[in-house]
Image (cartoon, rainbow, N blue to C red; front, side, top):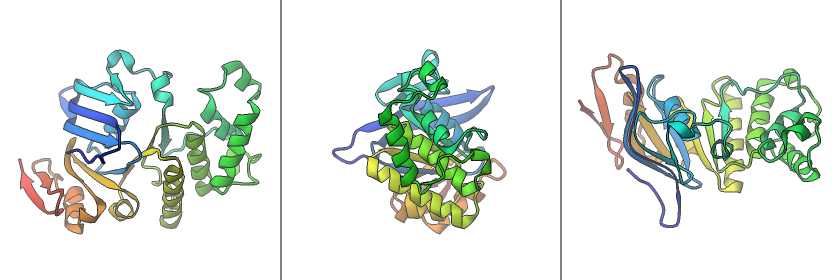
Length: 274
């Protein structure tokens, strides 16, 4: 299903995309389009295909078969270059944050602009004044003002999450992928982190794709929910239609690998399939 507004451009288009690991199908998507500025939350059990989908979009993995177009670039095995121009247009926030603990907060944030600054300048911290001002502004935006000189290893979990968000914003990407970004935070901090992330992307009209396990938070913050089960899209619709019944079946069905569920995008009703 395609949920695109009349004036919104697709930034992700998948057609008949299959990803095989040995003889196991990790992803099986007939058609999926994601538009500019959408806030898409992808839900599903562990192993449902969420991370595989993220890797396809990021360009770290090529489909075994089918067509994947991201930011108007057709991805194939020869194009999965993590250092390429394509991947610099897609920022990633991982559940482990992957910050550099011994560096300061501001240095971690500035690493987001490495695609725009030459390597030798970054080695000597010779960043252009415009990039330094931008980093300071983002530091204030994520409520870390005054902590720029602190080493990341001294920060709390919530502060590290905000630093990871700031680094992604510094990248000035067209798409931000967040793979279980709040799994290491307690519920209150998790909600605050998502609210901050949403506010930041709304100010920039950036496409946000979040892998998550909390349906309640997805209903609150998403503009669209996609449910994955066994690599297939079994729900694609607005949060208001993603009922408690649909969430229950998404996370409890397929426990024995025998039943595939299909959910109506209009009512959230659940029906068994094969």
